[in-house]
Amino acid sequence: MTTTRVLVVEDEQSIAEVLEYNLEKEGYEVDLEFRGDTALESIRSNPPDLILLDLMLPGLDGLEVCRLIKRDPSTASIPLVILTAKGEEVDRIVGLELGADDYISKPFSPREVVLRIKAVLRRSEPLEKPVSDKLSVGLLELDVPGHRLMIDRQEVSVTATEFRLLRILMERCDRVQTRDGLLTDVWRYSEEVDSRTVDTHVRRLRRKLGSEAHRIETVIGVGYRMRC
Image (cartoon, rainbow, N blue to C red; front, side, top):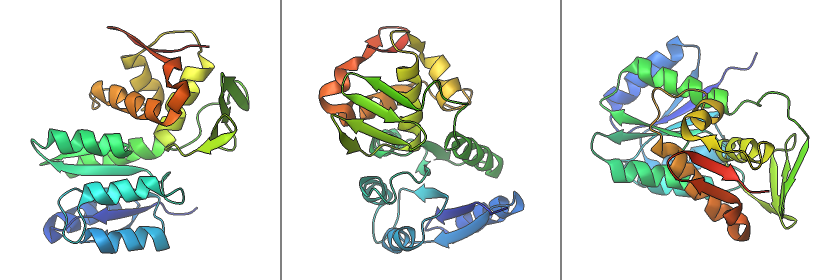
């Protein structure tokens, strides 16, 4: 069985080594990078299964690394978890807007990091058997086995989390999905995730849907609904 490889990008060596030790103890293969620019080169040349990315980095800051990874179709689908210092809420929100799948605030416990990474990797796995291999709403076409989104016959790049979110909304067309329900169905856990994470991902997904963005309706005080 192939070992899951995690790339830890953290400029503080002591923190990087603690993360490396705890992740290896859980059976992960771990690579370390201490600069944003060299990390980006490593990701492009040898893509990992998951990236754990600090935001404060020399060479290239973490937000720019995140932006470049998610803009490149060859790396956009790699699960990415950002590390933020306590109080850096703006950076955390920007990171989620750029395509990060989750965030961990410093200081953190190694156990929390392991649990978050396991949860993000679970979300990148296929959902239960799809209702249909092809889902269509308006100009939106979702190829479930191929993990492809087409809008008016043009392919649009989406992250694994965005794909799961869109798939659930399209499968349950015209039915309201609560934020808590989406946290459970898309993120597969709810206790550790702020419900605003759902809003951030919906906002980002709407931008990608362009002229079809209106199909994701906000139901005030409840959640979201895909309009068929």
